[in-house]
Image (cartoon, rainbow, N blue to C red; front, side, top):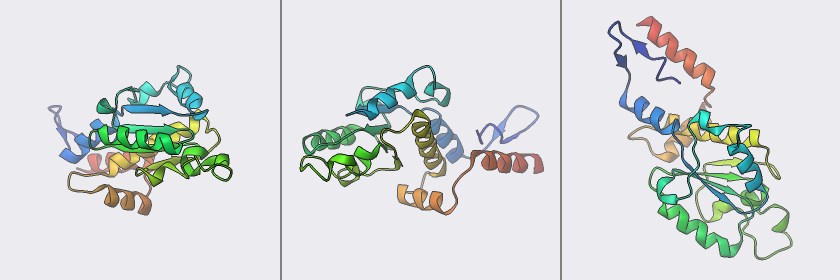
Length: 190
């Protein structure tokens, strides 16, 4: 979005930074690995269906962790399944992102109080970038979480670590409209 609004000269030359090009390419082509474990997986599948059309955001689901850059953990993670979640996370190439979807994967849901077999949040075994609350969350909430992942990617730079990008995002959350307007003003001022 911001890349296309950058300064264009008369000879159709685009002037921008390498960070902007790389971040634009990465945020415009997210390949999530759907990791559906319970009822949240139904909502995740509905989000990938034609009513919500995630492909307009450049999000195309993959079934292999080696081809994915985003893991969506949707549902109850048990102690047995936690080992598999870690294994799949470690097979993903860098940079990799994790979105935790639903109360069960965020904090154990209604099961953590009554069962010893449920993990009290997937963030105990792998780092989570974005949490999507709900039981189960609506497809619109998942799309909002995916847009937060895209904001995180937009904030990252070549020499910037994930922690620095998260801190930068917390300090000044990005509204895409404000970002586009700022880039447009910079392009027209020059």
